[in-house]
Amino acid sequence: MLRALKHFSRYYSNGPRIGNVKASTIPKRKNRPWDDKSIPSLEDFMFQRKVFKLYRAIVRAANQAPDKLMAKELIEYAKGEFLVSKNVSDKHEKRYLLSMGQNQFRDTCKGIGFSFPINIDFNDIK
Image (cartoon, rainbow, N blue to C red):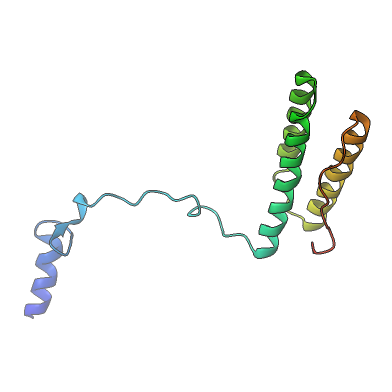
């Protein structure tokens, strides 16, 4: 009975407590970036790295262009294409979009006169 009274008085006499501290005085936990999202699988993580690698290569190649207006247009176009396909969930479609992006980047580099700086292996993407 005494144990039940201690429990009752601890939570209802002066409000809920954690140890000797009132629960209302403890700051709430800040949201962390991974709280709302599920952690990606290793395969998804590796695929994401390849997408970032292609995007960085596009930006680096565009920044080497002698014409700054053309560089800005290339970066804006690439950014738009990546944002359009951001919410694709099918693995095969993602793989297709990445290979098309690489081919389009390769063709653009050839048309401008740049060398294609990266080689992405698609064989390990399932």
